[in-house]
Length: 141
Image 1 (cartoon, one colour):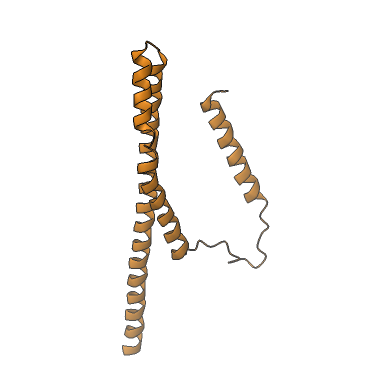
Image 2 (cartoon, one colour):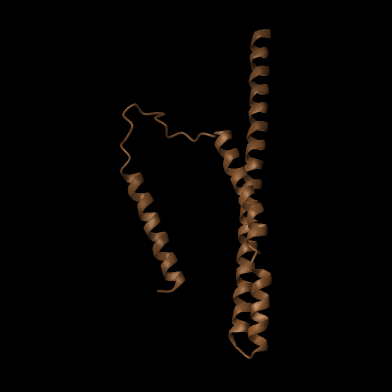
């Protein structure tokens, strides 16, 4: 089975699982609330962003720890006439590309969550100011 086929099957299984879970949620007889509301827990979001940043930092160094040894091994194999030297360089290049992709993804997650927290805090301040101004207006009238 190719990667694309396996990936498609995994996505289909995951999508079916989500659908089944959603179809099995009992209706709320009260007609509201019930924990289904989206909540923003700044501590949890901050912790996830922090972990993404830590992973980003570690991947930048740990993802490259075998680079020099791999290049040396590939050079030695190529020098001795083994075709596996070129193949090893190709694998190393693919590895470096994937590590860069993961580093960028972790940075996007961390930065996105930090932005979301800051944006949410700003929106909360604006709402509080609007409600306060509205209450003052009512009292003055």
